[in-house]
Length: 291
Image (cartoon, rainbow, N blue to C red; front, side, top):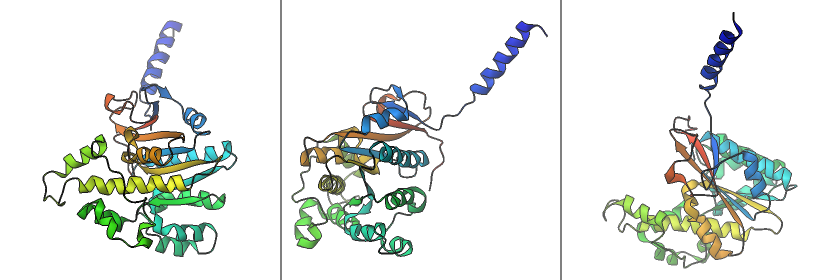
């Protein structure tokens, strides 16, 4: 076989093989430039807070959450704190009792009102914290109080007891309906009477969660530590939600945001996803889900 023909055949085979490579994810910076995971580690190792926005059923996001915690634990010599939307403030005692070995895993998982996908998606983070003696903060507002706001607005929280209010961000909670994320939620609710007496009550419930998570993070910041927080990406996209409230509680802290999105193609960042976070994790739309 002539060398030129052999070379042509090899090139054609290479094109076929490498053209079929499927990427499970791609990482971008806010400008849409492709980056490596190490770039995120380098940027986050010296900040006060990392807000990692996930899609709750996305296995790639959950895997990278664990990898981020593992790498920061090493690079920060253990100086990290973990927190998550998936645990509510009134369950902090149960979380602490489990991490400190006072109650069994069985009792913890039976009593902590865990999300249905806990064992596959969040248990690895909790067990990592337990194994390495890390603080794990339950940050989110108890869902019963979010339901109160969804039905009657933020002012309804004034009727709660002092004990109940201790589980929430300080009242009154500042609420800016002009923020794009909250405006979009109003548009989604439709006309009054479609499940909410007033359209703005739904974003108010969202604001209660955002403010309470931000307050929980702010209260548990420790000098020289990085607080890594996990939540639905809509809670920090476009530097709104948790980020917006954190900057009001602690104006001088440094924050890095990570967003998770799905796209048909992951080779470039779609225009609508530009600038939504400091780093954007793009996963194929066809990626299998955890539930």
